[in-house]
Image (cartoon, rainbow, N blue to C red; front, side):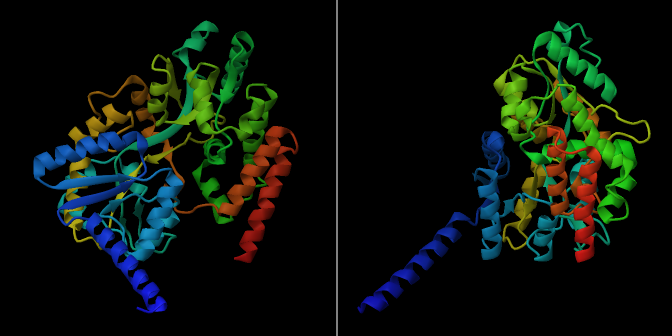
Length: 430
């Protein structure tokens, strides 16, 4: 065989082998699921065995970590047409919309029409994260394209033990921003702990807190109108949002390195009782349980900064699963997700992972901290639930300016003006 032909033969053989392996990895008699959730992998494996025992259907969970590696694998599989039967989509709602446009994910609406009780069992805000209403801004067919397996929200946290040591009532967290500042200063001065800690090196956490303040100060309509370009970042409301972060810095309750701190580091500081307050999501219950099982803390709503509008907190589905629209095991995949979201399985996931359930029926074994987090359901909002979203370039500028305000490099008014300038430039370009 000539050398050139031999090389060609090897290439064909390699392609055939990869194709064979890809096909063989998705056995006809099993449902294949890809995910990224290291904290839930062991629980998933146990549930898979239980499902096979009950139904005879084999379910195989495959984990890929870290999340960015997982996201790249899903993207490559979507392009190559090799998606598994069930998978999750990480990213903004626009990214999910791209899968809907390419007809890559199942619309669960017909299944819910057949079994309305299944749809009714979910917390509506969790289901809405993967839903698209009629005439949505993403211009995709209205439908429900994901099944939530848990629920999350982000709130303030406070250390009840430190409250006691400082002479504060551990059952009365701050009701407003002024009380928060006063309590954090007292705890810092009396006990030498940080008043407030958060992983603001991950700027989305800082941005979510800023929007919580914004909803309370200006109301939902003005915030969303800002994203639409109908309300200015130069307005007094947005200037006040920037000023609140500056007040935290001037009060001496946040550490110097907070702007470069990863959330994992912030979680360790709070778990080790070296900070009185934090801002974190309900997933932290599992984290703190591992870091310090004796930690005595509780969540509370973000302190009120205005009486003009209701408070809002970020929340929604913690994780959702989609079904491959082209899978020959599509019906089996849907049946498994229906089983996974029933009360018995949801209760097991809570015990195993300390996450809030995606269903309305409260489990019998919900711990005290998760019960408090669950009370936040009525206050939940999230970019994936809004009819309009802010452009990434504007969000990037917003967080950059917020960092400069905290550092004292610019005033809140200058920060707001800089964000508005970028916003107007993008509007003009479009």
